[in-house]
Image 1 (cartoon, rainbow, N blue to C red):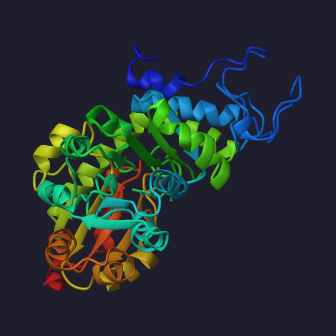
Image 2 (image 1 turned 180 degrees about the horizontal axis):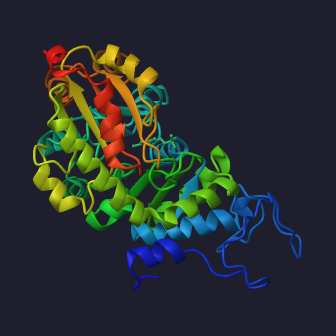
Image 3 (image 1 turned 120 degrees about the vertical axis):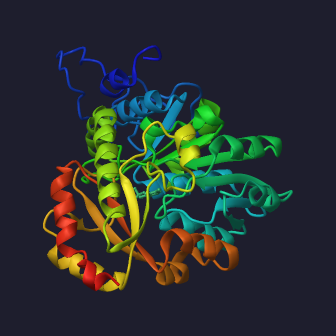
Length: 403
Ligand SMILES: *Cc1c(COP(=O)(O)O)cnc(C)c1O
């Protein structure tokens, strides 16, 4: 599939018609165990080289369809799928870091990742430094002799701030560190971090790649050698395997990822323009807007600016959130993103600092530039953009109330 275009790879990679029945769509193999022609070992450690299908936690043909499709889209040698984005994140962190090691991580990222790095890793003797990764000097300054990995997320949840992957990859290379990039918001349609020097690409498949809000999944992509410990240890002994049914649903979603991302981007740009010109709105964050502070980096690093934006309003955001939850007709007031249904959620800055990010000083000031007292994160779905604008216009305060 290497010489084929992105749309062709999305549709066909990982799949072939069934050799027995000729079925055109991939089979869903729910079996947890596989019959053997002769007895073999009972531990993964007893096998060498290519491991046959034995038990679904070790490998499954439907999960393999998904892994091969994702590797073809991301342009990496291999992929290991997990039961959720957090299962993938935890597997990669705990496989790469041991007691005494140190992790440099971006100071703003997905809440679960931030809490795992700041709360859980230190309890296992793994130190973490959260740095503003838009500041390359700060990244370099945070590196210690015991640092093993740099972890970035771009665009970062929920403020859509970007990190220059190629520049951070150069720093990681200079210091002999692994670079992991959570590319969930970008998807391989926008950005392929491995091409820019990342060692590991992490996705929550629950978002754009699955795309329909009906299956949790996660993945780590990279080289075969890099992923080997994840496949033969983290997956098998931590057990965060994806259900074959979810793998099947997500592979079906991934087939339409390139065309869905075009529509998500188009919708998000229309909504971003609408919101930027709305008197109730104080600021809109989206990498496709000329007002984005890193618009030039977005042009270099993102082929598609994706479908999620966040915005600040004048006045009481929390009260408006209550109104949205009750009165929005099309947009669902709900967490998550990347689905065909539009989703909106209020993220209060003070609450987020207390529970998750714990930023202060310059880091807090930089976060507040984007988020103020709080932002609405809007994941623009695949509905008609006009209907979404009208839905928001009904609940946003009228100009006279806005001041
Ligand atoms: C949702 C998300 C995750 C976690 O994924 P789950 O599938 O919910 O476990 C990780 N990173 C980012 C950027 C996310 O948006």
